[in-house]
Amino acid sequence: MSVLAQGHLNKMQVTIASEPADQATYLLQLGGQNININALLGKTIRLEHLGEIICRHCGRGTRKSYAQGYCYPCMQRLPECDVCIMSPEKCHYAAGTCRDPSWGEQFCMQPHVVYLANSSALKVGITRVNQMPTRWLDQGASQAVPIMQVATRKLSGEVETVLKGFVADKTNWRALLKGQAGEIDLLAERDRLLQEAAETLQALLANVADSDYHWLDYMPTRISYPVNQYPEKIVSHNLDKEPVLEDQLLGIKGQYLIFSKRVINIRKYTSYLVQLSA
Ligand SMILES: [Zn+2]
Image (cartoon, rainbow, N blue to C red; front, top):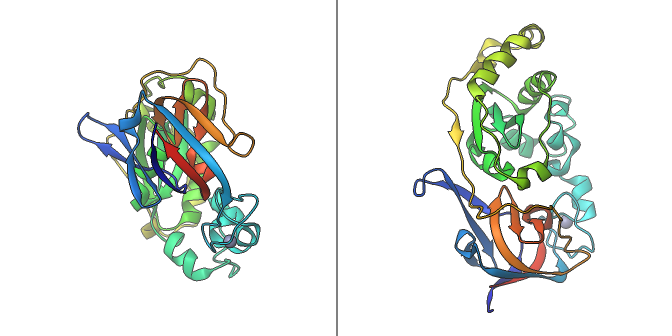
């Protein structure tokens, strides 16, 4: 086994390859190296946390990571760590209380889409237009289709909230890592959803300018993940409690590495100083 790279963890970069068709392809940028994670499938990998966590914003050391890679003061101060990031319908830019209005203009006052995805079950989500398909790949979705484009993050969150009322959200990360999701007819689900939600949506959109939203009609995107084998039991590895993870890599899905005995969410450990060997 030899050291491949050492550095502070970032989420893996994922793209969809044309060969093999529709396959998610993972690149980990670590300490200035670009590591093709797909190429490590089947191999025994060693990931060691060397004890240091450096805030991804200010670069100061922090004993604990907040909001996936920030120190406590940055988590309390930065707009990207605000409550409206998890709940976009709570965007308070219009109230003049955005933590950093120039950040809000760049990331929130921009065109967003509302999409349907299959990530272990039907899911409604939102993302910035230029974050497709990255968002779907990060979530481990096997199918996805954008259904509506809107002018702002807040409006996308409001539409999402309405539609969620008509979707039994059974998605969970354990199911995602237990096997391949069954096929869902996303276009049929879209039509059903828009019919059932028609009245509530109409009430919401009655107060929205026509130019601020339009419906989309796309064919769903398909994504397959490089997984040789799904584990029978899902045990999550915690780098804080056990700094060394050494196991055979069976697959990659979303931001998870699937090993023979453990799974680990790489994004959760953003900013951790690690050494990767294979
Ligand atoms: Zn910081």
